[in-house]
Length: 602
Image (cartoon, rainbow, N blue to C red):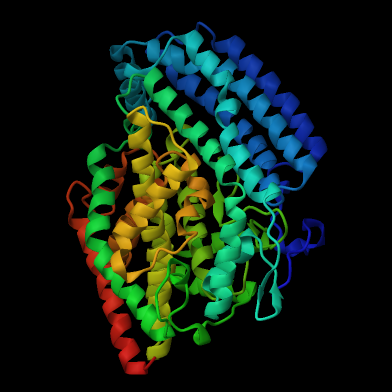
C-alpha cells in the first residue's frame, strides 16, 4: 500500500541529481557570488558610455555573454536545490538571497539594453554585418525599440525583478509548504495524500471509489487556500498588465506574445481550432474509458485512468534507460551518449520526497548540462516523461553547442516541440516492435492519455482559461476566486460537453498549474506537439533525411523565429493544415483504440 513520502535526507543518493557539476559546495557558491559581483562591476566600468558604434557590439556581446553565463550557473545552483525540497530552510534562504542579488545585478546591467536600443537602426543594421552570428538577436533589438523605456526607468524595473517574481514564490510556498493533506478513508482503510501522490498515483488509480475519494479529499484541501491563491494570481496578472501598459502594448496578450515572436493569429488559431475540432475526438475517448471501466457516469476525476489498468507494466529506472536508448537511437550516437551521461552523471532527480516540486521539468543552464526533475512512480508511462524531458535536454545540448548564449534559446512557442518529439519517437519504436494487440492498445492509449491528453488537451484548456483571464484584465476588470472558478468550469464544460460530468473540484484545477506564472506558456505545449507530430511522421516515412533536418533545426537555437524553425523541419505554420492534420492524427489513434478494444474485449 502507498506510504507517505520520506524526508529528502532519507532518499538514496543515486536517486538525487548531483548539483556539483554547477557548484562544488556551499563554500564554492559563496566564492562564486563574490566573484560574479566583482565581474559585473568590472563589466559595468568597461562598458558604461562605451556602447556607441557598430564596431563596439561584437566585443560587447562576448563580454556580456560571459557575465550572464556565470550568473545563470550560480542561479541554477541556488534555484534547483530548493526545487527538490521546499521545506529545506537553508536552501530556501539561499534561493531568496540569490533573487535579491540577481535583482541588483539586473539593475546594474540594465544599461546594456538601454544603450543598445538607443542606437539608431542604421547602426544596428551595420552591426549585423560586423557580427552576423548575432543577426537575429539584433533584429529582435530593433523590434523591441518601440517598447523601450528611459534608461532610469529600465534600471528601476530591473531592480524590482525579484518583487515581480514574488507571486510565483508565494504560490509555490502555499502549494508545497503550507498546504497539507490528511489521509483519506475508503471503506475503513486509510490512504496517504499529498500533491505528488495525487498527481502521480491517485488520479490514475483504477479503483473508482479510491480515485474519486482522493479527488474529493484533494479538492477539499485546495479550497482552504482558494482565496489566497486567487489573490496571488491576481497580483501576478496585474503586474503583467502594468508592464504591458508601461511598454505601450494594447493588450497584455500582445505583450506576452511579442517575447515569443508570435502574433495573435497563431495564438488564437491554436486555441480556437483545438477547442472546436479536437473536442469531438476526446469526447469519444472519454466515452470509451467509461465503457471499458463500466462507469455509470464519466466525471472529470476519471479522465486520467488507464484504458487497461491491469496491463500497466512497471519499470525500473535502469530499464527505462534501455527503452530510451532503443527508441531514441534514430537520433544518432551523440544523442545516445547524452542519455548515458544523464544517468551516469546523475542529471536526473528521481526521488519522491516531502517538499519536492510537483510535475517534471528540465533546466538547461548555458555552460553546463541539463538537470531533470521527475518523481519516479515505477509506472511504465514514466519512460514517456523521461523521454519528454530528455527532448528538452537534447534541444539545449545541440543549440548551446552550436550557438552562443544570446543566440541559443528558441521561442517558447517552439520549445515543447523537441520534448514531445521524443514521446512520439518512443511510441513509434514500441509500436514497430510488437504485434500484440493488447500491447499496441497500451502504447496508443499512453500516447493519447499522456502525450495528447496531458500536453495537448490539459494545457490547451489552461490556455483557453488563461485567455479569458487576460481578456478580463485588459478590460480593466478584477479577478476573484469565484470568477476564476467560473471561468475554468466554463472552459471544461465547453470542451467536454455532455460526455463528462464536470464534478465539484474540477473548477479548482487552475490552482494547481505553475505555468500560469510563466506568461503564455500553456498553449505552447499543443503548438510544439503540432510540430513534433508532423515531423515524427516525416521521420517514419523518410528516415535519416528527416532526422538530419530536425537536428539542424535544434542546432539553430534562437537564431530564427518559431515559424522559420518549423519551416527548417519541413512544417508550414502559416496555415491551419499542420494543426488540422495533427487533430486528425489524434482522431485516428482514438479510432484504433476503439477497434482494438472491440478486438480484445473490454
